[in-house]
Amino acid sequence: MLSIPTPLVASNSRIRPRTALIASSDRSFRQRLSETLGSLRWQVREVEGGAQAWSEAERQAPEAVIVDAWLPDLELSEFLSDFRGRFPDVDVVTAAGSVNGESSRGPYRQELLYALRSVQENDAASWSTVAAGRAEASSPARVVTSRAQSPIKFPPVSEYDVSPRPPAIASINAPTTSQGAAPEAIPIRSQARAGGHAQCSGERLPELVGDAPCMLEISRRVRLVAPRLTPVLIEGPTGSGKELVAEAVHRLSARSQKPLIAINCAAIPEALLEAELFGHTRGAFTGAVQRRVGRIEAADGGTLFLDEIGEMPLSLQSKLLRFVECGELQRVGDNELVKVDVRIVAATHRPLAEQAHNGKFRADLYYRLAVFLIRTPSLADHAEDLPLLVEHFLEKAGRDSPVKRLDQGAMAKLRVHDWPGNVRELEHVLERGVILAGDSPALTAQEIDFGLAVN
Image (tube, rainbow, N blue to C red; front, side, top):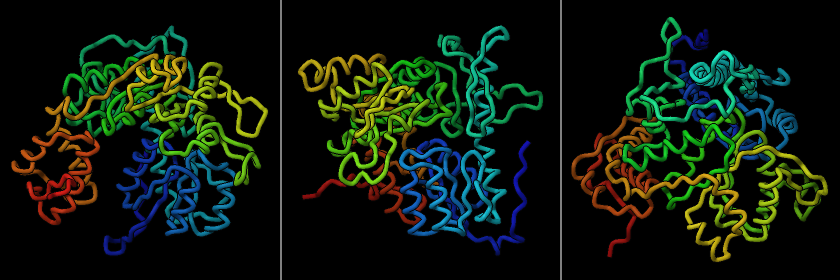
């Protein structure tokens, strides 16, 4: 049983903000750890890799840095050694709880370790709940390793029952009864806040806000495919939540304790995309001053999310196809083949089947990626979910301040908008409105600004 560390200050008047920097490419892990540290009065900054962590520390040195057990851009051991040399007063802890030297041990170490254990034990408890509900005593069990390196058993992929069943939702953060029984079903509105491994095919996943039939169908499809190794292609307009669907597939899979590595194929120049995906050796090209692990290799054992796969150049698609077919990659400038085990989830806003038919995308790669299709709708296709989405985004915007509400005029203005930017546009409009409202507890129609030029 965990106990919260004794506060190190005597009164609220002596409490000062403490800053922690979390370096991990796993956004779900960062968010859960941030929430736990926030409850202990830490201010948290999040970064995805070692280079960003270094840059953030240069900008403003934190009291502590928590580094995931691997980094997508730098070798962990080298990063720790160099970082401690540059920032000797910063308390550095890895996600596995090891510190590799006590020279930077800080006064809040116990709080950091408590937060880590809380997140890790919640992960372990959630998987134990899944295993207990799914596995029979006679069923063989596989073992995965959590961030805390403790063995957790869960049933093999083939034993997951994906048939519809009555609602029964278990939340990661929900306490069990004194007899260890599973908690009662959580209402939909509470489920969105709790997060967890919902198993009922009739309820939506916490990441996917909306009760429209098309949104419930996405949740059903995610639950069906997540336990398998099947490649997934997510199609939908820009801003419709494709990345959230990919994260849900990873979270509900047997690979959730391993990394989810994302790369936006449209955001990286063609000349650099191959090295970013496959990695490179030292001296492979001008500027390659050291060996670098690519995104595919960094995702070994986990999930690789290829966002905007439709933008990948045809010349690079053939190399990706080879990896998809045989699971082997070749770093730029290297002759050695590296075996990598990843589950591929891709996303695009383009009609990829049509592009494959017209020769603008490799047809053989398309059919390899589109084994299981999930389509995310535009906001106009589930406009009935607008009140739920508004509530969700206002609560998100109010994490560090009082939650604001919408008056009838503001909601009416939102309802008549056509939302070309979909859910992402709604989030930005509400965030802008919260800022414009200042200290007012409510957003009016005046604060709803769509960013459109007025003639």
